[in-house]
Length: 416
Image (cartoon, rainbow, N blue to C red):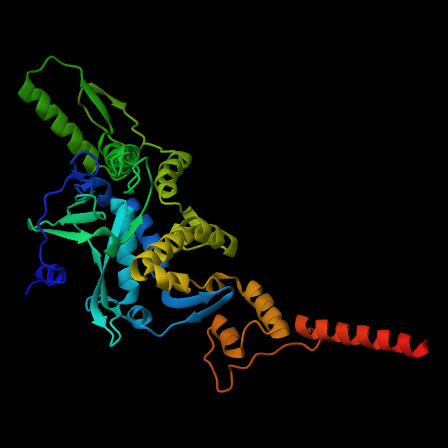
């Protein structure tokens, strides 16, 4: 069985239905995925930089009660620990989801599950895999007032209809379309401006080698001072070139009647500001800076990258996955999907030392967690937390103040 057929086999049988209405006047919300802009390394490098960073996120199923968060060791946490599906590791999975979201404006994740019935009649979902989908066209609509459903058309001509609520849907760039991402009002990617920028940048890159090559070929113009036919003129030019090539000192002595006029062809000089401007337009589309692309960034620059790019993915993924994977009742009791991204790893050594000193004083990190910041292996008994005696729990302070207040009141009564 081929890879594509294997992916298709995860869907339930095709549900045939006459749709009363399709969103956006029976036009596919998403069609013609892919564009020539993705032949550009500048675009691919920008998306890859974002996807590579997002792939470092850890996905957990948790129960949140106020400020207390407990990580659950359930099917979701287990699957996202290493392999959400048989074909991808967790890093590959999250990276591919972000690639699809950035390229298509929308990313769809299909959670595969088995319905398990309890002895008391209740049922719950036992998740067995999560798959990112890459259809050729997507339609979202409703049938006879029932909940929204979604139809995927794939490149082999097959179509599958699924409840929209059973899919995790992530969007990138919004227009007035209330359902789909993409950037324009019909839910499709608008590449008009970036295509012009890429074309301009490509012409600059292609023109530079040609300009250099031309500057090395044309040396000058030789004017023969004679009325000769074409064959004789050609022979004169050949003799002149032979004289040029035979000299070793750069000085040519010739008895050919004529005049040689040098032609200076200088290579095109493209200002660095122009090149940086064109590249910055591409980078700004994806919310990254030149320092992030090159990997030569500071802690503050990475913090800005996190807030503008990574945090957006985290918020969307947490909300969409929580709404899809947990029932309303489960959400009410605190079940959530949480994404954890370690920002400590991108701090400068000086900042890490300051954090380690703070952790040692306040007990916010154990010793092994401090070791991990500096790439040091954990050690036995390293799960201990240290705290300075100069810091006291608020509860202890309250009890101390109450006891002092009681002692003072008792002393005053004794004096009376």
